[in-house]
Image: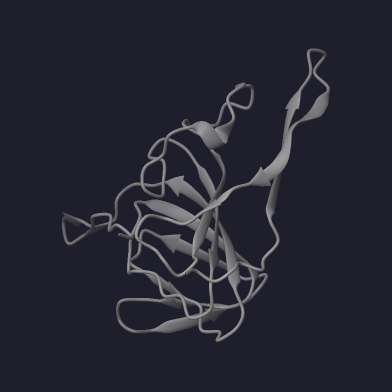
Length: 170
């Protein structure tokens, strides 16, 4: 059985405009946390918003949480996702064809690269992933960690004439 996640629920507040052009709150509610297929240790993802165009359409009446995305990214727009990682969680090594801004909100995580290097990131730190292979490890024995990611479409990375492919987390 997966451990109980002690981190606070994620709340999203989405604004829009009324008929007179005045700003107003459109959506105010919790973001469901869902464990991805194949993970049993309690890790969970919360999808806050996604767009299917760039630049984004700020007048759409579609809740961005309902738009389709790929495994982790959207090739045509942005994705905002939270990931909660239990103590000792280690993600698979993976790569997205995207530019990712990852912000640590709670706990500490180690960014693990294929060469074995590890970089400890703490609350307030941001990691800018530029299409690189990477994994995440929560080194704590007791504390959960949370990151929020903003993923943007990017051109594939080409090294020595060869395009580096995406690598699934599954």
